[in-house]
Length: 100
Image: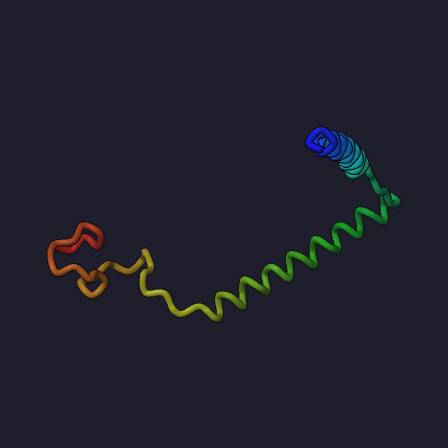
């Protein structure tokens, strides 16, 4: 009985190895196809379309940055403003804010 069980296990392992090899071949073929696939469009049409898309994306980005800046709380840690004792939470001389 054990011999038949061992034979069955060996057959399943062999089939499993074959399936893994088949899967690896399929995956390799799909990757090769994906990496070598190209699309093309007429030259002048493509260039003008790329410029239009670039301008649209730039405008969206600038609008997004402006909206984010408008929502941001006012900054009090501007490098143009000198640090004060209120800026620091330390009750002793502080090297971070430069106040002794």
